[in-house]
Every structure is written in structure tokens, then in C-alpha cells.
Length: 315
Ligand code: G3I
Image 1 (tube, helix red, strand yellow):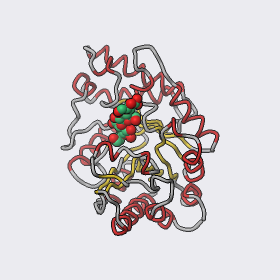
Image 2 (image 1 turned 45 degrees about the horizontal axis):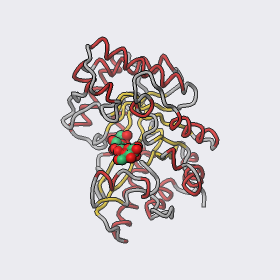
Image 3 (image 1 turned 60 degrees about the vertical axis):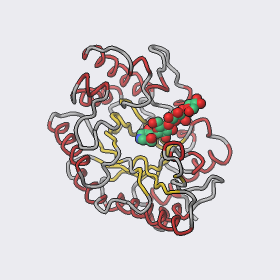
Image 4 (image 1 turned 90 degrees about the vertical axis):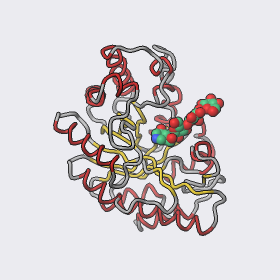
């Protein structure tokens, strides 16, 4: 049976996974390498991870994931440069003039993208910039700088690595709706201003049985703006315990998302947010829910794995 990464290659997309750098040994590493053609560090490239104290950098975790990817012929999705969460406290709780915050933000982008120049294929430059109603989130960046911080982050990233594909990424923008309308309008404005944006990431943190019926149409309208699209953090959570019926629904859900990406020519790839239930954020953030990934806690493939494989089809 062909690995997912080969099935995906044959269809012209990549199949990726988020990984935890500290777990990349043994069976976890073997599966990550064999099955996936792209990796995203789940936490290791976030600002709070790489510069917890101003001017003190800590690249070990990020390096480990990038080195692993290179050793296994995998692409890397860099995640993420400018986000309101997992910020170092010196950024989050600092008192900033607009000019000072703009300078530390663009320095951060320049430093991190520059460090990995030529080794990161896609960057989530700006993560989760929008509120649920599609307006600009009043993060420290949005509140201090307004929407202009987004353009500045993309320009700094492009200058630091002209070959990397630069994405804006968000959740609950998967189907048509107010938040995805807000993202669509944002991307239109950025393109009109000549901002170097190459793609839009759709996280797709989904609930069992609730793949948006408008997912494909939504991906397509963004693609028609002239940017790539990608599914960047797919998982499908369920109320525990998992039953055969729930796992069968989850298989259908994973297959539906895979088919939507395949149906849109500019869908570059699909990444699952952790490939094993033992390495998923869901149980910690949604008590009583879990089993959201394609492999169980013992690294056995679940029906969801077959859902992806069958949607990708035979080589
Ligand atoms: O590293 C510390 C460890 O030292 C400490 O003992 C432990 C105790 O809680 O916490 C560890 O940090 C945790 C970190 O994951 C690494 O495991 C944080 O508490 C925890 O909050 C953090 O959660 C991450 C979450 O982002 C934070 O928002 C998840 O792993 C990560 O999967 C998740 O990923 C995000 C994407 O970046 C953006 N989109 C949504 C997605 C899911 O929330």
C-alpha cells in the first residue's frame, strides 16, 4: 500500500502533518517520515519558542524539525511569524508605540525567515488576524498598528526569503460565511496594494460530521483571486469514546476535505494537525473530545487514514 505522501505527489499536492519536534524518534518519527511529504512544527517556530527573552534566541526545537524534514525529503511549512497567541511576554505585555512595535515585529520576521532562508517552502506569515465577524482582531498588533501590520509582515518576509511561499492563515474560514468574507476582502485589499502574499491557509479544525458544504466553493473563490490555497491544520474532533460509527463518519469527513483540495487546481496541499491521537491539542482544549487525527494513540491507522488514501486514489 503506497504511503500518503506518494499518493498525494501523484495528484500534484503535498500531504503534510504538524509534528512535535521532541517526539521525532522511534515509531513516531518513522511514520512521520514515511507517510508525509511536508511537516509543520506544531509549536517550535512560534515567537514565544524562538525568542522567549528579548534578544535571546532558542532555535534548537525549530532546527530539529527542519533538519528532520531535510533528512527525509520533506517540505516545511513555517508556522508562524505574527500571531496573537504564544507570544513572548515581553511582546505581549510590553508598552509599545506604533513605531517600536512595527520595528520589533519586522525584525522578528526578518530574523526568523532569514535564518531558514531556502529551507522553508511555505510560511504562515500572519496567523488568525480576524475576529469571528470578519473584522480585524484587536491583538497587540491589530490594536497598535491597525491592518498595516499585515502588509509590513509580508514585505519583511518576502525580502528575507524571496523563494518562500507566503500565507495568511486562519480558522473558521473554511466555508462561506462572515469570517471567510472578511478574509476574502482582506486578501483583495492586500493584493490591490501590491503586498507579496502567495496563499491563504484554511486551518480546518472541524467537528465530526460538520465539513462545511461550501468548502470547495470557498477555496475556489480565493484561488480565483490569483493566490494558492491550502488546508493547513486539519483535524476532526468527536465526543469520546470513539465508536465504529463515529470513526466511519470521520473517515468520510477526512475524505471530503481531501477531495475539496484536489478539486481546486490551486490547492497546494493538505496538512493534518498532528497525525496521531497521542499528539493532538484537542483533549487539552476540549475536555471530553478527541480521537481527531488519522492514527490512534498506538500509531495504528484509523478509518480516517483510509479516507484520505481513498480520496487521493491509487498511484
Ligand atoms: O511546553 C510547555 C511545557 O513546558 C509545560 O510543562 C506544559 C504545561 O501546560 O505546557 C507546554 O506548552 C504547551 C504547548 O502547547 C506545547 O505542548 C502549552 O501549554 C499549550 O498551550 C500549547 O498548545 C498549543 C496551542 O497551539 C497553543 O495555542 C498546541 O500544542 C498547538 O497544537 C496549537 O496549535 C494551534 C496553531 O498554532 C494555530 N491554530 C490553532 C492550533 C490549535 O490551537
